[in-house]
Length: 246
Figure 1 (cartoon, rainbow, N blue to C red):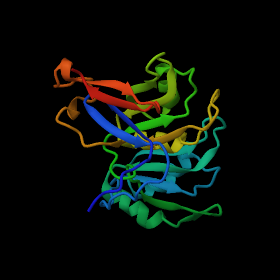
Figure 2 (figure 1 turned 90 degrees about the vertical axis):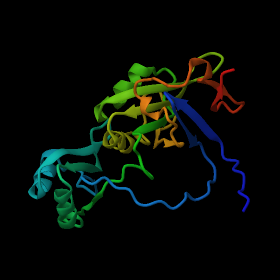
Figure 3 (figure 1 turned 180 degrees about the vertical axis):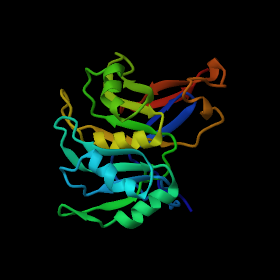
């Protein structure tokens, strides 16, 4: 069966032995069916009362076991609750007990929705985020400071114009932990920051299949000889592509 060629603009990227792509807009075919992936101890909570505090949240869920972390996601500018958050238990059994007992629980006129968090659209084992619509005055330090409250960031890669090296307002952030990346995605997607013309767009990066050098991603190493490493190029749409060195 012949496959229909896609006309959707695609941003191709790669660093430290990893390659991937991110579709920038337009219609796409439905993704192939894959088994559901979920975090076994981390719960996502929706419809929290807006005035609920993290200490209240901790007390409510600690009845079912020991909690590593309880966090309510808040608007960065106002500090007002976004009415959802995360609770991470020490064991799977404790997390399952909390889901069974607190999903649908009513408090202050709100009915909680409690479920296992899914690390990404499919499998977010890379904990890497694509961030667009950043103000062009920002540099790596400012971007790190913006996302640092969500967890340790291993790497920040800024996308720049080929000819003048100016920042294009797009960056890739690689977090140490998947759950920190997930919280950053929930907390910063559609967030408006000073100097920006549009709200931030924060999504998980969909990795292409990793090659044999993928385990060097955080150390910036590659087993490929320098003369064969992939070099950045840009097409006429400004999309990053890579070619092998001669």
